[in-house]
Every structure is written in structure tokens, then in C-alpha cells.
Image (cartoon, rainbow, N blue to C red; front, side, top):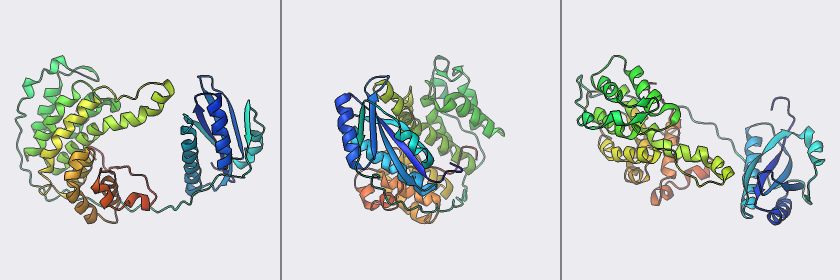
Length: 359
């Protein structure tokens, strides 16, 4: 947007048929769009295009305003069986060329622009340091009970047979000096390669819990294990969000990715055992554990008091804000008790963790 004087745009939607196109175009024009066109879509249905002349300022406020207007327009389109289908953003100097577009359906509105929401940009709080002390671990090895009972050779990961997984887990259990490399091979390369889950992913996860509860893994490395559990458990929802638009475009039923449901359930099974360690773990691990619990609403509700206390402890930091957002999206009374914290601040309830495995 460098060199732009102000932002304008097009908001595009696909509706089922000509009647829906006509009705949605008229409603979008009545809402405030000065020009709305519709034509048959090459993949079926009708494409409805609402011209938004703005102007919106070329800054964060302007971008958020036009996106908020787009979301309101999508509500209108959905009422006629439609869905968002992109659009575009351009400098106001190009409005004339978009006014020249024509289509079988053309509705000219009587208003100059749709209602513009008020947007307040609040600076993000700073990341706070999260302590990994005191650390109660003592050097030792872990047996990994039941590791040989899993038929690893019959399971697969990203590169074929999972028969190498036991050796990698044993390296971690033996206090390897190559911790980061082994953990990256185990998850980054094999079990969660490029964010996908595999047949062998879920069976490996309980052994991370066994490593954690043995109290022989140092705090920084325990945090890595918690983080990989959190990443694995989040793959189902990330996958659903990432492929939602594709599923709509293809007219398919939205389904989680392969093995992600099993992985999600397996991680959820670990959470109660890990929450029992809350008081013993240092702050830097309790933060990740809080996010891990919030990924699984049933456990998150039961841990809400502890998460709220940690959020208060980290008040004024990004991590504290993330935990309040996590509380706000928990179901039932927990979310209500936070008092619409996210809504009051105009932010979207998404939990982000400012650390990565091995970091």
C-alpha cells in the first residue's frame, strides 16, 4: 500500500442463483454500497460484487475498518445463501475503472458508503520474561514403560515406517546431549512434519508425559515437551480453520485432517496428569500448561481458577493478555465471568504462545 492516498475495495460473494443475487445486491446497496454488480460465476451460482469507495486511511485503523465492513456485508450475503469469495483492495484513484464495470445485475445505491465502525488500536503489551526456575529435576533416565508394546513397525510417520520412534524416545529419556536435534527429528521431521499428523503421532504422545512426570528432565526441556503436546493438540483446529474455505469452495463437508482427532483426544488424556503438576512447575511452564488446558475446554474450565491467577500474575504482559483471551473463549460461566474482556478491547480471542519448542 506504499504510495496509496486512501483505501477503496470490492467485497465479493457467491450466492446460489440469480434470485439470490438480485436480492442480496439490493440489500447490499440499501446497506450503503454505492454500486453492486452480479454475474454468473464460472463454477456455479452467481458472483455478487459490492464496490466500497471508502475512503479508508492507509493505516492499521483503515485496514481494520474495511475488513469490518466486509464482515457486515458477509452477514447480508449469508442471509441469501451466500459466502465470501475474496474481493480486492486498491487505491481510491482506481475507483473510476471499477465504476465502469458492468454485469447482468446492476444496483446503484443511494448512499455514498456503508456505515464505518469505530476502531481503536491499542498497543500490544510487552512480552514478559517467564521464569524456568526453581527447577526441581535431578539427573537420571526414564524407563518409558510400555514403549516396546507399541507395534511401531506396523505404524507410519512422514517418512514411512515408525520403527525408529522408540530409539528417538529412548535418546530423550537417556538425557541426550543432542536434545534439540532429537526432538526436532522426532516431531518436526517425523510425527508432525509440516503440521500434519500421522498414524504414529498419537501413540508417541503419552511417552512425553512420562518424560515430564519422571522429574529428571530439566525445566527448559520439559517446556519443550509441553509445547510439542500443545502443538500436536492444536493440529485439529488449525486444520479445520485452514481448510474451511477450501471445503466451502469444493462443496465438501468439512472434516479434520487425517489422525488429528485421535491426536487431539490423546493430548486431552494427558492434560489432567499434567495439571496435577501445576504448583510444582515454574511460571514459564505453567503458562504453556494453561494454554494446553484451554485447548481442551473441559479441562480448561476445571483449571480456570489457576489460569486466572496466572493471568493476574502476568498482568500487563502479552502472556497475561493471552491467558485472559483463553479464559474468555472457555464455555459457560468461565467466559462470562471474564466480563467480555476481549470484546471490550476490540480484539479477537486467539491464543498465541510466544515461545517455540527448543527456544
